[in-house]
Amino acid sequence: MSREKIKVPGNVYEELVALEREIHFTLDTQDTVKRAEDRGYMAAANWIRNNENAYKVGFSWGFEPEAEAPHSTMQDIPQRSEPMQRRTIAHPPPIQATRPEPQTPRAPSRKSSSGSSSTGIVAGIKRWINKYF
Image (cartoon, rainbow, N blue to C red; front, side, top):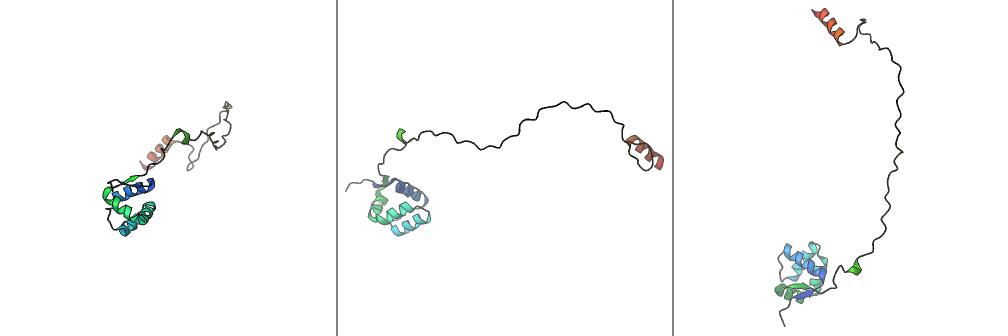
């Protein structure tokens, strides 16, 4: 028997590496399966449960992913599709500027305050001064 790493499927290898970073492996397969399931590594847990002897050898010698077909070849790239039509809100047509009509001058409105005919701040100050001084 040569000292080669144990070959495992790619997804199992990724989960075993992640599991190794999170916990310390033990030779107790039931404990390792339980920890793998608790952390969501179901592929690794199933592989360890089905291949206990291979796991124990890989525990000592290491694991490596099985050779798979190369990813991202030119044939795998899908053809570009037509862009989707965007849903937009219809905007109202722009309002055209019109010239304002000339206004006729109005007479200033007067407010009556306490029977006095004079208005404004200055008149109010004068009344206050006359009232109190």
